[in-house]
Length: 106
Length: 476
Image (cartoon, rainbow over all chains, first blue to last red; front, side, top):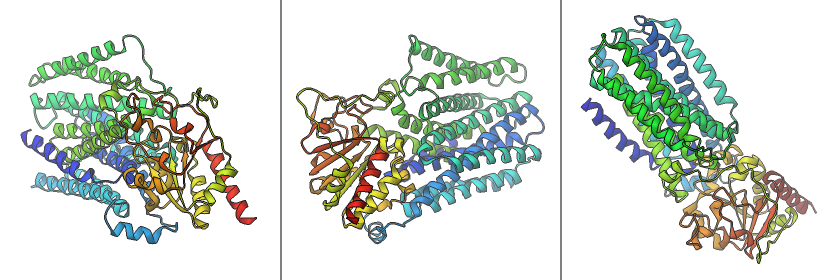
C-alpha cells in the first residue's frame, strides 16, 4: 500500500512536468489520448473476465472488458485521426513552418 | 519469476505511456507519441493474456471484438465538431470499466477466490474505485447529453438539489463506511457488504447526474476536462485495488492531464473551479435577439462585399475564430477565404484564445481538419502584440474572448479574463448573428466601437460570401 502511494505521488509529479509543456494546439488530442490511456483498466478487466472460478466476477469482468475496449480502441483511433490532420502541411506556410519548429518553441 | 516478468512488462508499458505523452509536446512528434502509447497498451494487454492464468478465452475474444468494433465505428464516424461529446462518452466508459473491475474484484473476495483477503486496504480502495468510477460514468453521460443537445444546455436546478446532493454524499460515505467495517469479515458477513456496495453504486450514479445537471452547457468543456481527470483517478484507484503499478502510473498521468487542462480553462475564463462547479452560470446560446442597440450607442453594419474590399486592400488580416464557427462548421469556408487573401499577397494569421471552441484546443483541431497549417495559428500571448499593426481583424463567432470589458470594466464579471485585443486593430469586422451577449451574459462594447463593423449573418454564409466577392474582384 505504501509503495503504491509512493508510485502515485511520483507519477503525479512526472505527469505534471510533462503535460504542462503540451502546447494549446494539442490540448484536444492530449485529452482524448490521455483518456485512451485511462483505458488501462482493460488489464484488470481481462483478468476478471478470464475468471472461471467465480462466474459473477467473470460476467462483471466481461462488461468491464467491453467498455474498457471501447475506450482504448476508440480513444487511440480518434486521437490518431486528429493528429494525422495536424501532420498535413499542404498550405503555403510549410517553409515558415520549418523555421518556427526549429527555432524557439511556441 | 512469472510475477517478476509481468511486473517488468507493466513497467515497460508505463514507460511507453510517459514517452508517448512526452511526444505530445510538439505537433510534429505527437502522432508517433500516440502510436507509442497505444503500443504500451498492447504490451500490457498481451502480457496480461499470456502471463496471468487466463482461462476463459471465448469471453475475452467476444469482449474485445464487441468493444473494439464499437470503438472503431465511433472513432471513424465522429464529426470533428462533435469531438467533445465523444471524449465525454469515452471518459464515461473509462470510469465505468474501473468501477466494474472493482466490483468483480469484490465478487471474488465474496466467493473466496481472491488472492488476498478482504482487509482494510481492499475495502477502502474498492469502495473508492466504485465511487469515483460510477460518478465519472453518470456525470459523463449527462455531459454528453448537454453537449449533443438531448439534455437542455441550460443549468437545471430544482429546490432541494443541494440538499439531495449532500444526502447522497452522506449515503455514499455511509455505504463506504459499512464496507470498511466489514473488512476481514468474510465469508461470514458477505451479504451486508454486497448490499453496501450496491447502495454505493446507486448513490454514486445519482450523484454524478446531480453534480453535472446544474452546470450550464457552455461550461461543459471544463466539466469534460474534470471528468477526464476523474476517469484517470478511477483507473489509478483500481490500480490500488489490484496492486498493479501500470494502472497506478497511467491512471495518475491521465488524472494530471485532466487537472492541468481544467486549471488552464478556468484561468482562461478567469473563474475558479468552485465557481464553475457550483455555477449555474450561462445557458443555451440559442437565445438569439435581433440587433437590439442600447441607447446612445451606434452600430456600423457591413456586408460581405464591403468586408471583401477591406480584406483585399489589407496587408495583414487576423482571423479570430470562436464558438460560432464551430457551431456553424465554417472552418472550411474560413480556410478558403484565407487562401484567396494569401493568393493576393495578404498576410493571414489566426488568433486562438485558449477557450475558443468547445473544449481546450478544439479550434486547432477544427482548423487542422480544414487543412490550415498549424504554424498559422497563434496563441493569445503571441498574437496580442500584433493587433496594433493589423489592418483588419475578422471575428468569426467569438464573443467573450474579444470583449474589452475584461480589460477595462472593473465591475464586469469577466474583468481580468485574458482576452484577444482585437479592438486594437485598425478595423474589426465581427461576424455574428445578433448583438446578443456571449454565454457570460456580459454585453460587448466592441460591437459599438468606432472601428468595428458588424456583419449580421451565419458564420458559414458570411465567410462564403466574402470569399465569393474576393474572387469576383480578382476576376474583374
